[in-house]
Image 1 (cartoon, helix red, strand yellow):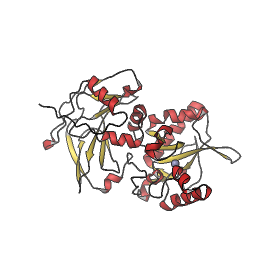
Image 2 (tube, helix red, strand yellow):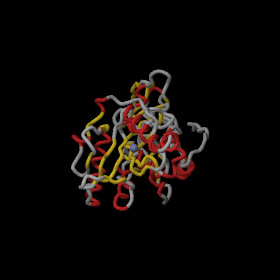
Image 3 (cartoon, helix red, strand yellow):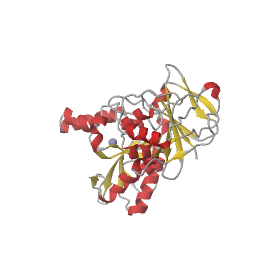
Image 4 (cartoon, helix red, strand yellow):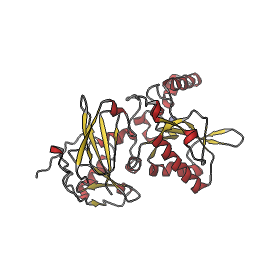
Length: 328
Ligand SMILES: [Zn+2]
């Protein structure tokens, strides 16, 4: 069986590392052809470590771990939903249904504070932040985190931008506050932190000192520091150590260890189509995930998914879908 050669497109940071990983790992190509929805070839999988650097977490799958496949039909609108949706100055947010948003005040644990009863997040993001903050409290003994911003409406974002423009000017404001409709806060997957003092005063969150633990460990909870200092030119937003984004397991882990911001990672995933080589990610807990991309059609898209294995499916809010399969 001949192996389909993938065309080299533009090479983002990390692609070279991955290519090297694939070569070193033994490039046999995951040829999970959709034809007739036959089982993906290879019911066993070989995962090979590729080196000693921190890129060790991403491996080449020598063989797909996918079993019998089926398909689900997705609309263009579905592409704008899910924990991997990219929202930035180029890609506006399609606002989530009100029913998808949960009150942080009602759903939180007691290891952190929330600024008021109107703060809302998507349920899976809230679950992830609850777990992260509970473990932070166990590790550092602190309960003074304040979740001060979650989901924002269009009007709320407009108000924040207007305030920032009044304080500074339009150019400076644009470095910090996204245009209404293009803020990640519209997704319900993003949260801002500050520090709460018993006297009611709040302090900016810088992610340093005791709090550095959060910025260093959030990758294990499906959460990323969305706007790192060295990626400002790509994200269009200045360094914001207080802004966290839920993207789901194991993507936060992979992004962090590949040194990619979300824009770069979404771009990278496009080079792992269903009918080509898939991305294998060895998660820190020993789990292996198999990840592939399916381009959205002009109408509905049939997305191949495993029949018997647990998976998540997310739109990327740009041009397609990402399927993440838990292999073992
Ligand atoms: Zn924010």
